[in-house]
Each structure stands twice: as structure tokens, then as C-alpha cells.
Amino acid sequence: MGTLRKITDEYFIRSGQTQENLLLVLDGEACVEFDGKKIAVLDRGSFIAEISFLTGEPASADVLAVDQLFYISWGNERLKRMQIENPGFWMKLQNCLNKDLIDKVKPKNKKESQVED
Image 1 (cartoon, helix red, strand yellow):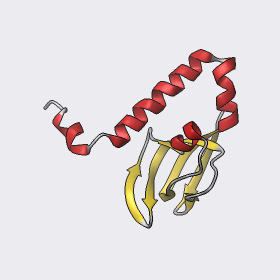
Image 2 (cartoon, one colour):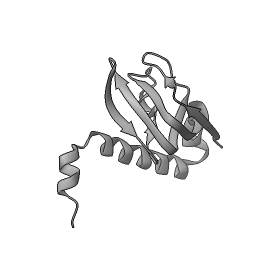
Image 3 (cartoon, helix red, strand yellow):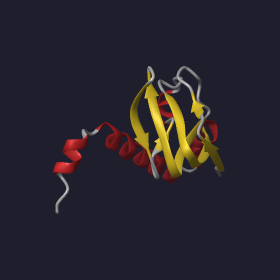
Image 4 (cartoon, one colour):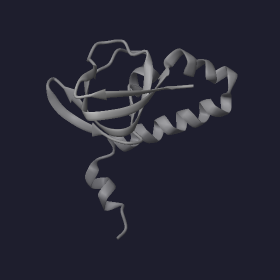
């Protein structure tokens, strides 16, 4: 259902642009920048453009491929049709997006304090 893509050392999302796809990092890293400052590094298993997918709003940050980045891309409209066509899949996707967003906003020191040695 998705399209595999590879990009090397270039911006592939720009702040203010409407996003038509939801992306998932398969290998490599993507740097998220806001006003020219790095705010996050996304690696394997991280979604990209998920906020735009959920809200329908344009991207709020720039995203740069660091070296080679492999990702899978799904069209937003196709995914949203799945809400009706395949509710089970839709619920699983929502759960994955929720977990991803929680992991991104949870303070790093909180995450580390919860890890048992």
C-alpha cells in the first residue's frame, strides 16, 4: 500500500508546505528543524508528517535527510479512507501514531528514569 523511497542529504519537507503523505523511517536518520535550529532526530520506527496527517495543517518544521534515509510513504487520502474500509487497521494506525507522538513529547530524562537496569 505504501511506496518505498530513498533520499540523501536534502530537505524533503519544508515548513508551511501541505503534506500529502504520512512517512515512516525504515533506516537512517532525519533531522527536524524549526527556525533553523535542530529540535529532533528521527530514526527507525519514527513517523514523519504525522501531525499534518492528523490535523490537515501544513508542516510546522523542516525535515532533512541525514546521509541516506529510507522510508515508506502512504498517501493521506488513502489512509483516511481506511477508517471506513478497514476500521481495525485504522485503530492500529491511530495507536501507532499516538505512541509515536507520546515518545516524541515525553521528556528524555523521564524516559531514562523509567528504564530498569
